[in-house]
Amino acid sequence: DVEDAPTQFHYWNNVSQQLMHLRDEIIHSPAFHAWKHRALLGVHRGIICWPTTAQIKEEKEKEKRGKDELPIDSHREKILEHISSHRVTCIQGETGCGKSTRVPVYVMEDYFER
Image (cartoon, helix red, strand yellow):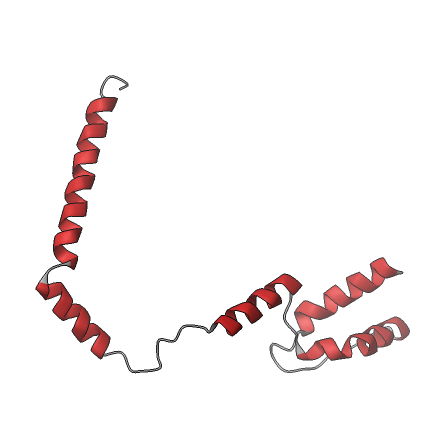
């Protein structure tokens, strides 16, 4: 109901204020600080580690390129030559080397380049 909108707004605004006050009480309480201290003591050193600036920069550059280097990338031309000169081509490689993701892209790019 449109007429009830201001009343509802004030009600939910009051609820929001109460929740923020309760949150502040909790995070500033000695019990919460003791619990947080115990929880962090249980985390072994080295488990939580933030990336360095260099690592972040490297990841951004990889994202810009749009694809990471995969082992199959170095065999692109060989694969395309084999596909164009044989009726059947079987590609064998380790899991995650790019067989099912890169080869179809190679074929499509090669098709559009011709």
